[in-house]
Length: 291
Image (cartoon, rainbow, N blue to C red; front, side, top):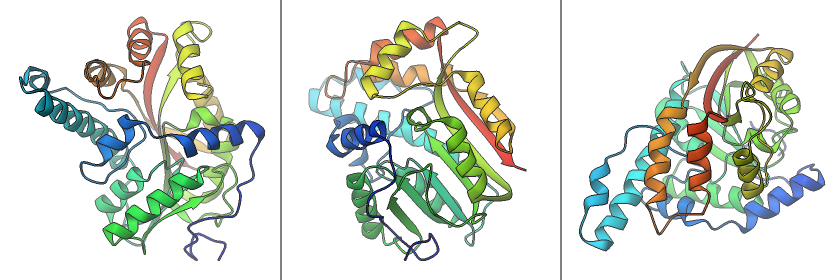
């Protein structure tokens, strides 16, 4: 079984560079509470940030244990809102359609898309541990016949050309070269298929990447791209933007709350807030059609 239609859930070892091996090692070892504790609430494990207004009353909870639980639930609500925002841009889709989740992490985004549209979903991650975890969650939900995860390189999936009605990256483009990534999405999407990306990018009207962006790169072992690089690479690969949304202001409340979540802080919260506020870093959604 070597194709998405055959239901492959893993591959032996993805084709990858030395850098990608380092990235895989990082995510194979990752046990960050900000990912795991939030996912335990409803078995939807996301590897991205949140958007929207915060219920700040959770910080007024006098009981320390309840305060922690309420803050965790609020952060998870915000990250789930981000996943739903992305999924809403994939349609219209039917249960017969197949979608591709590039850099799927522990699989939450694929589940969100399936629950919204009833579609088949293939998630790809360079981390064998993440793929195993996500497949176990799909089995637990009883949706493993329609939602599958694969230990593969999203730049070279081996999946059939034109097999997908929609595809996306949710905070995973900073680990790869954009032209290679968008070429694979363009190959996998049928004509008229929809690609959506939500990503942090540095604002090149500001100049070169700021000190804060460099610190974020070091923290996550990634290489954040310039905002303009996305639009140039999309155009070179037959992906035409139909919707662009600046989510920067909508992302700030999530980081403000996370900064006050003592049980979840990772030390990068102030860096994100500074970068968003000084204009050097932006949180962007781009939806594009494959022509």
